[in-house]
Length: 465
Ligand code: NDP
Image 1: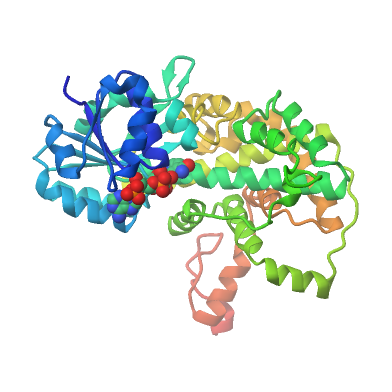
Image 2: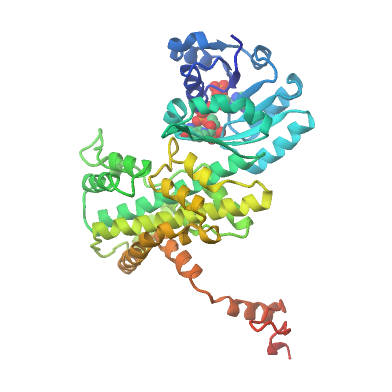
């Protein structure tokens, strides 16, 4: 049978997606820039070899596909993607679809969509989450592109996606950059969730004096309750390991310098550009940036003192606090999605987004079921933190979070994510905030003017005479 889709790029993610397709009986054609990974792939694809056609070159791959073609590239979504597009545009026919399944900046995806459209071609930005294992056994996928491309791709994506209660975790988010944008915000939420976990770990480890294995066991217990999520699950596991090269816990042997490829930072930047601020995500990006300054932290620790006091967080309170923080973190993430949806006219379906994040992706969490339900019920002002179904959880969780953050800050622990959750909450629940004074200052130094509360027409303060 003819291949249904071509896959170019058999690195970690491309090979995993291709194996997933072949395993699900989808006829595929594959190729790679260099030859080695093609041979290696064919060895791994042995059990499903009858569904796979391997081609030596990109030209041959394109030739092997029936029109309208579906050509999926899993290569770096930066300059290599642009070079790839230059190469394929003359080889494709009107109506063909090129899919970028990498982690692209959605601005690049929008520009590439426009460029391919000039040639009568469709460009799809497909967000794929779940890492290598997800790609192999069922990722969560966020499609951005035309209806025509979706019609062609949907049967394939539905088969290979993670399934939640029988429904595939893959859907069309909207046109052009919508899929990559939703994937970017997914990663921003992932950053915040990871950092929040690290902050609690720090408190339990250094504040309460627990061993990593004890903290791991606690995360495993939390993972049996409302905090159930992939990140809690793996944290429990990670903390249970010892260093095979030493006697101590594995986590102690790892250099405390976090890497980042940019999606968390993009989320924070896009939020700011959209006139929003996702402070919990920004806090997580900041924490990774500061973590990279290891040498400086050593100098500063010696000069300023690194000591901090003990804390005694109550485990049940912690659970309530973390649940509240997670609701606020998702609130922030969905607010960015709402702002982008408005700006780019994507008409994102927030309940659906929460649903396709329930399985396959890194931020999958029990809470997402409630989040999708909250959107379907109609959250007041579109704000998750105002959703009636979260009221009892927040009523208990916010005071717990307040006690946790106060105790930790008094003892000298940095909580860039957990503390900014409270700043967000405490700002948005104040009908009258501090901005009147900001407006007065702006008017004083820059004659910027202000609106009056009584609606009267005085645009400048008396300081201007
Ligand atoms: P790998 O490094 O494993 O594979 C990279 C692939 O891209 C290889 O097939 C490589 O070909 C090819 N490639 C690199 N440069 C070029 C080029 N200039 N022209 C043609 N082909 C090129 O990367 P991953 O599979 O991890 O990542 C691929 C994409 O998936 C990235 O956009 C990444 O952000 C995204 N992603 C990764 C995730 C992960 O968990 N790793 C999760 C979700 C998305 P060759 O073999 O010839 O070098």
